[in-house]
Image (tube, rainbow, N blue to C red):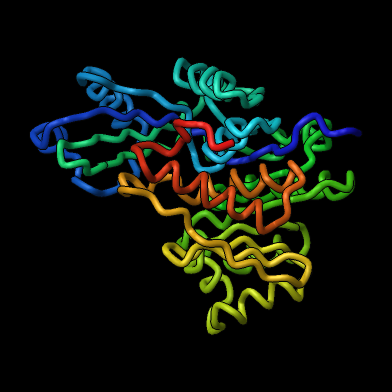
Length: 324
């Protein structure tokens, strides 16, 4: 089957609700400043309503892999997304937001169970972001959400490590990877978070060994995947396994190991770092988009650096201006 999509992402479907608030708002509503707190549905509905009454609230369809796919679409690359939303107003707005951003989103919504996930982000005048996150329906993605023909139609399937906390989601990843591999397409994984790696190290290793072609990680996540090894040793372990490794190293830039060659990618300097949220997501967007456009890995890596630099120069995890 010829590719309909260049990249198809699988991950959490989370509506970001962002609003400017006063410090008094945090105190009145018992929001811990500067933290990320997991909350339950009643609290999410209550806080969502209060943030919606703020002076300038914004709703942005988000989630780590979702932000990557939006970045890919912004670069003119054909993209699609698979994530679980509920059959509710927030789920409808999430789907509309993804489609408006140029990402094909046709996942079947969940009925009569958990509400659509949302991250409620209160931004105080000092720029501090205080987040209350309800994971909701996004955690219930499973094998039934992996549609064979859709997976077969994607040149690269990109999977988000944050979803790995649920057995059904793990099974969905394996199903998607096996379909992609049988079709001769590529599978990519982002490790997402240090704590994800520490919780699921052996499961991640098994998935990487048997199903992953392109791995994204930051340096801390890579070292957690291979405890006791140095950075070079951990990178070499992936290379010996025949994997393409794309590893970010903060101010040191990034390293891409592919086909036995190591490419050191410099950072793109910015005048002022405003918000580092989404830097890794947009780096992955640039690298994957560059790869499917036929760039060398070194050039794709530099496009990733450009995309990361753009997103850290403003608030929010999505690009606001064209790179290419």
